[in-house]
Image 1: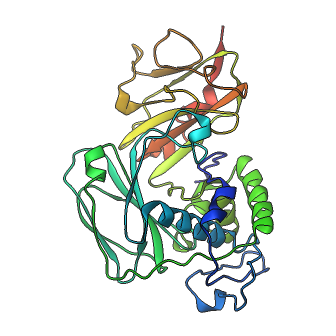
Image 2 (image 1 turned 120 degrees about the vertical axis):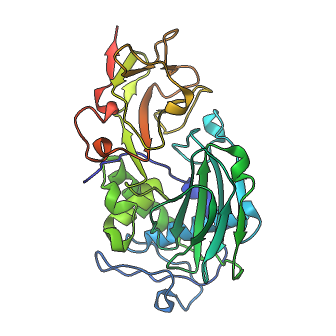
Image 3 (image 1 turned 90 degrees about the horizontal axis):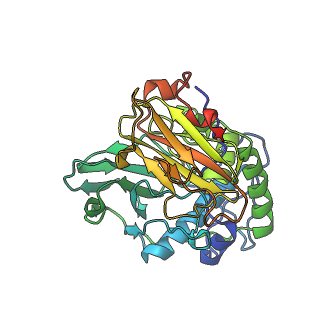
Length: 353
């Protein structure tokens, strides 16, 4: 099933080059749909000049830069950093389309012979996602216990998302290797050009199942490039489905009525300004917040309808004059996965007088 997702998380490209230093580098194949493998020696450039970035090696370039940024935050390999709650000030949000749905702990790990991650006991939602050096991901792992994590590359990004703040503060990772991560040096001009092109394609709609996946599950080099450019580290459709709305003027009052999506875990709706940032302390509503139901069991979420139930402000703090809504389904139901009628609420947002 194809899921067209125009919006997701994007790391500001300019900040990623700050953490880079010269080291082993990937070459730049020019063949369309050629798979670049970051773990192979054949992908290493022998000279010390910055690597020219193309569509073919963009997922590896962006991932390498992202890994360098993570190591800078954690202070080294095989460590988690507890990410703070996303701020409401757009200027303080370091990525677009952040959310306040869950707590995060993330880190970069040496995956040689696997990593054993112990999650403490909790009855709340908790998931583990692995993203490797080729921007391939895999189905998430859920729940407490000792889990063995593997990847096809030497290093991988591990993200723990949870509704239990204490659980993500008490993770225990057992590793078998701790070789230092060496960032590669990428040509910024070509990187920015390729990134902008991919993000433009992404913004007009793309195939989530082929962008955020792995080669065994149908990920293609082209959609991997587009997905990395527009939403690095997105989840597979079996775990999360994203439903964005079109942009709307922030001058109005809007309603979105929908049946219960029956997510396995929970659902949320987050509002962003025209640049893709949250702008108000009240930025989202989720099923975890027990929103008010209508008499027939449906939900009506409101945007810019001051004083009404289930309302998210769209004007206070928004200097762009427009907004959009992103619905997230954590553990999507079959109805959402199959894009059945009535199960994509963002298609039915209506302005009311």
